[in-house]
Amino acid sequence: MSISINDISKVITIIENNKHRPKNRDGNPGGLLDLSTVKKEAIVIGDLHGAIDNLRIIIEQNKKKIKSGKSFVIILGDGEHNDQTGHMREMDTSLEVMEEIFSLILTYKENIIYIRGNHDTFDERLAKSGIKQGLEFKNYLLENRGEKYVAAMEQFFEALPYFIIGNGWVITHAGPVRGGATRDELINIADNEDYRFQLVWNRLHEFRGTPSLKEYGEYDIRQMLKRLNLPEDTPFIVGHNPMWGTGNRTGIWRDIIGIKNHIIIYCSIGSPAPYLTIQDGKIKEVFGIKQDEGRAHVSLQSYR
Image (cartoon, rainbow, N blue to C red; front, top):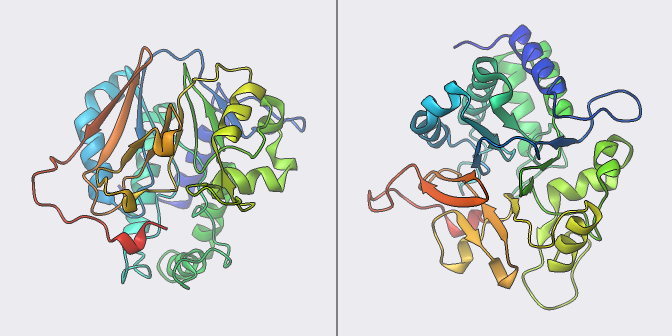
């Protein structure tokens, strides 16, 4: 399906008019998506970073359930920007993934949810290994799609929610706000640049030294849940911070560094297309590609 500027406008309308998205104090779509009353199966896909084949495999495996409305999909942001060493300037797959996501939203409406990640921007300050991927993608789109398309894509980024409260679980791209945040603060996150930054940039404090201002720990997860009036053992699911260096190559890390009910999921190029299914409080790990099929794994250099 060829995606037009008008198509992107329709996608934005679907995102902003989601009936589970409370309005902020200005009457605009807030930063929170409250799916706590939705009892159907959730399919959770981590950061894709250009992994178009993984996205298509996962959707194909679950198409009947999505089409029938028995299941819905959550993609944790960062659909664009190949993160493999030596390929970070490659932008073809970034456009492929984003247009595939637009097509899926147009087809399945609210059954496809995409939240904002740190790579969902054209900001030139976004850089990996010295490569300004946000700016690179913008220039690529200017050359291949034009200024109006770039403006529409940027509007899409700005329309995205940042946090989801589900039926017995929560999801954001990177990690909790340090010290937690309330429901009202999440809804009105447009007024808080620091909270927006933290939800898409914070990384797990893996070591036992003094944490930086860009790191979170178990205390922050518990405080986030407490301030949202949720049980302290509520599963807290994020992407952003793959733990390839642990030796676990699946793309799913549970209870990392001993934090119970904390899950990191990553679905980038070279991974076995991992995803989670959540139904009736049960979280199941699924792999779109059998791990014995000899598929190349991601470079350890790309895990940051």
